[in-house]
Length: 434
Ligand code: LLP
Image 1 (spheres, rainbow, N blue to C red):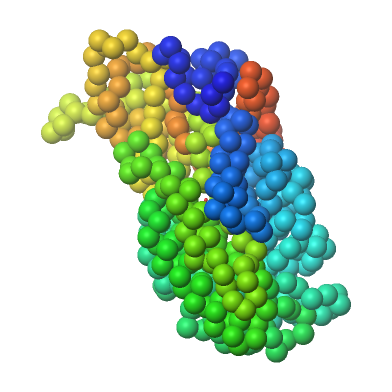
Image 2: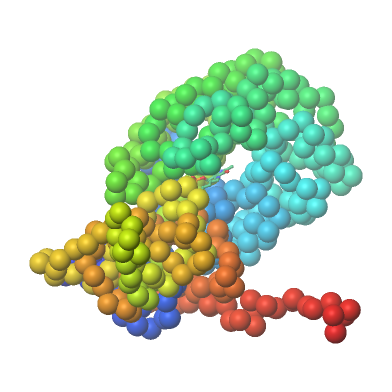
């Protein structure tokens, strides 16, 4: 049986479940995730690394892509560790069943409280991004009589990623320590008690669909590794970040995971004098994006004002930028299609598919060719497994929508839709207003 989301006999299925049936059961909008697809994505990734001969490895799922406990736990059971960037993500990772010794703590602004939480949990490593952070971790470690393991995140000054807002490896980005200052940073660590430099870390951007930026970045890591080892630093771990893109329908072919794994193996195969390093990878999107859809329904359609040069057709649906902000924020394309494929001869029109939020930017898809669809027709917005629910907001007082996980022929709510009482929970009107 196929896993994930695919049409069979004109009906969209998630694993073995016909999604029109699910849409009749759960009120829309809701996110729907395929457990089998997540596992398949993880295994494909891990097998590619194994086949390339990378024996010492750990895939640390980047929790920021989708922090649902059910997803984290599915990946934990498959063998994943976690890449976290906040105290909240640490709690999610641990409650999701990731063992602490497989957790790496990334992020440019870790607070003392978050660092202490990392110590308390005995995580594997901190990926550090500034000398100030190194000093803070060292001081906090000394207070506890510990030695914290570090990898220094290097900013290799490389252009990568689908959009300027998700590029992280350019010199002007806030991330990492400049490549030119890397050697000094390792010397700084070596002179401090309470910290030990175990690795080199990079993450150059997200939604990368071509190997070239990885090739350049890995070469820089390799050079730095050689330099550091000859300067006497015992570097044993390389964290090569995430960033592997998942193409939409308009994009180039997917990034070849085998070629990616082979590139890593080739670049780091014999790193004298200490030999091969342990490799950590931090994929987010590549593990979960295509394992999720957002199910929505047509509320109504309307045309723009008739006196404009071009009249537009709007399809207003019950999902919005509050549940999927990527088209608004990054001009991202997400394929949108009805759960039941229309008959071949049905006339088609151009539609702007929009939500009900009071912003012109509340766009889910522009200029989509689809038939006219009556109110209540259910639609799927594809590739909503990553960076959809995690970026959700309550704008226009919209409660967080339900999340459903399917597994072969079963389904279960993994997070119910918030009630209005839950949405308002904890808010008070100050005494002086009473
Ligand atoms: N590691 C670090 C340190 C990161 O900052 C990120 C993503 C990842 C790993 C995972 O990257 P991935 O494999 O998912 O590309 N909200 C944007 C994406 C922002 C990514 C931020 N960092 C979007 O919706 O496209």
